Image 1 (tube, rainbow, N blue to C red):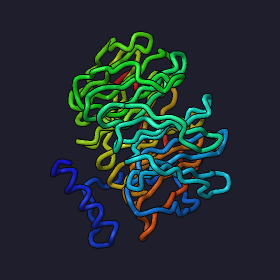
Image 2 (cartoon, rainbow, N blue to C red; image 1 turned 60 degrees about the horizontal axis):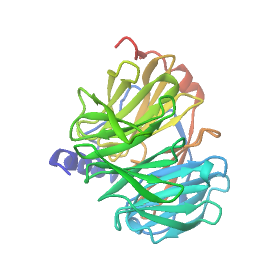
Image 3 (tube, rainbow, N blue to C red; image 1 turned 90 degrees about the vertical axis):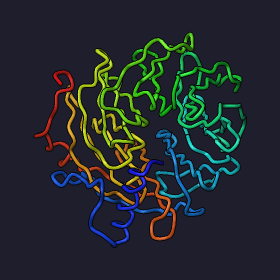
Image 4 (tube, helix red, strand yellow; image 1 turned 90 degrees about the horizontal axis):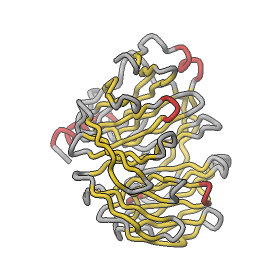
Length: 353
């Protein structure tokens, strides 16, 4: 962690404790978050770090990586309660539900493994080696392959989900951020955050077919593909920027300031809302529609609110918090549709920029 990021987090933490009203990455005063809090539900366990979350909307199950407790939390979004804790996944970082396979995958950096979990039994059914520091994941369904970001190893590790075996290791030439699948091209995209690039991988050959430069990127870690609009949203943790990349012409077409140390991104596809969650606790909400992107709200969501998952059916957003007044909690938010629909004055054309 560099000194600048540390100082940002320290100042924001002091603000949350009431020690100061200042925050190094202050929210956009002009647009409050278009969200209403529904509930803060206890998640149990120790007040240690949470990481990625992934939702299976058909089963109404949200899977949360409780990194500090080496467990995956299983949360029923209908009943609004924890229904299981899957232990023994050492330093779990990434988690990805793949409903078509009845599987949930988790990355265990403590053992450098990919862990497969059966959604029916919520039991671990397989483990496979997954590089040096496995983190985020993406699934290519046609090839039946899972791509695992090896952050410090500088690779994407490729796992065949039919056999749960490692089939390829793709050297990316730098520290790797998040990895995502694009269903339109059928390709995998991975952030190479120390090179300010996005690498494009063909799952048919497991080879890099393009490297896309990202002007203005510093520490491009978070990644979200919006296939219908041919856009990629890239969160840069070292300079608190969100870049918008046009996947057709491979150009960065917009850049927005966001809260300090942005991490996880999520989308509500029906409402065309993009969420950016950051370590400083600030969440930014964007609307991407008709080739236009605009920030419609930003504000303090909660301490270390760097993870977000969105239910496309209920439109609720879920934010795991490691320490909310001395306990872990899942902060559940509803979107205010009227606010989101009417905030159109700052539209930026992704095609024209």
